[in-house]
Image (cartoon, rainbow, N blue to C red; front, side, top):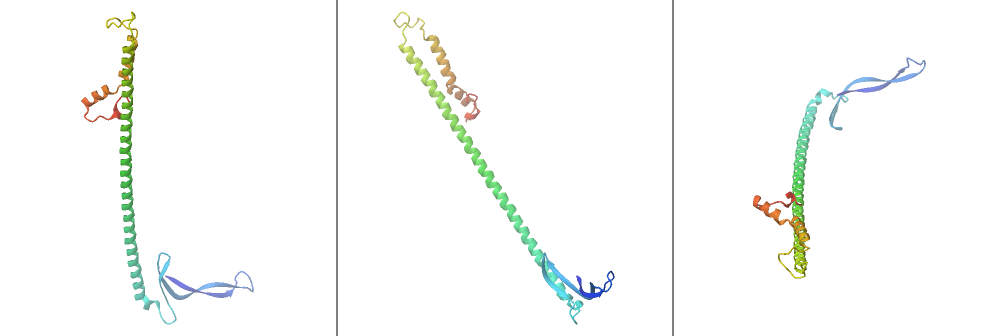
Length: 191
């Protein structure tokens, strides 16, 4: 609610012979109903129409503004709730994606561990085959194969077979399978 002012001229109190402008109340009132920065209704005294006769229009404009604010607030609340639900859905989708990625990475590590075990087993088998071949081609010190005489390759063969046993993951795997139905190759100590 504001009162309208008029600009009038009067003699200056500070400078002799000069005039100054000043604002004077007119006694005419103005009521402005706003919503945010927008004016919804302007009611004012005009000529022979007094503001008091326009109060019914004021209450109608005020009522409409309040109803619009309620609707806007309800709409805003619905939008915020929808955004919150969308954010929860996005978070759930991200969580599921991350879980699938974690499971895929674990499976990839298990496969890599299995391939590494197979390579170590193959190396152990190659060493055993090589030792068998060397023993078959080795001759005893006297020149004739004698089963009871020590061969010069026996110490080397024992060492080579021990290396093959260290490389061979099947013993550790068999021990795990007896203690655990579904072993995880990532959990074994020999990887």
